[in-house]
Image (cartoon, rainbow, N blue to C red; front, side, top):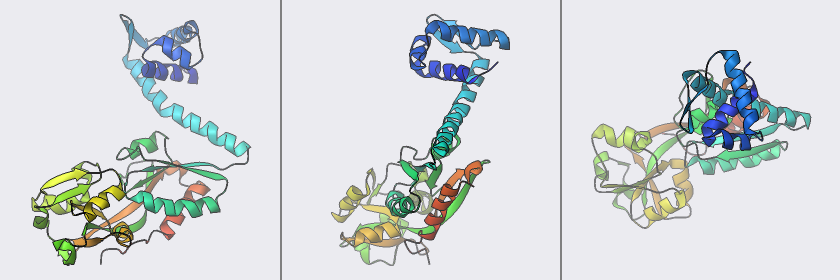
Length: 301
């Protein structure tokens, strides 16, 4: 009946677009691949593909098999990798996905002591999962997700590891640099610089500007923190960042952190993992280390 090779064939045909290309990837002959799938269709009593000219179209049954393949094959690959590591006396690799642009600097401070404490565990940081990390967790592409916006779904657990305050960063000579706090309308004449993230995922918009019905003069996106704050320092805009990061840069640049509103914007960083993996010793150790060293900046008073 349904075997791993069938799942691999369906997934590769979907990826490669043809039986020939899939056969090459899987190191099979096209006839062997076709025979395996034809035998499966006979056993199941239903078609997996329908031919449309030179192309193949998945049937409803085929779409279901593809969904199973996309879910199961990564789990099997991860299981095999970890079992091989156990056999070799190794712990494994901790794969961390980032949904928090400015948290990369914080993460570097955690990784160094972690690697020293766990010499038989490798760490791999993936940043391509901005705001797609939940799918990456479910898809077994990462083991931990760093995020300020957890989605509490069945099968996942999220641990808060530190609190921080979101602030406005301005040049030291900016008129707002001496203000006790910033009002939304004071950004109407400012160029607001942010990371390249949708505005509905930016706290400066959702918790500060939008409730007041205000938009900045212009919104500019920049990938890297260093370039962003060089722009701020040169008076070409203002930026919203965690206070701990802003104050770290203020030690070497002429920038100032100013509170957003009289009460500020309080946030937390979470580490998310699959519930089934939460008991893995080296994963738990990373969470504990992150929680213990997470009080980097002052929380909102």
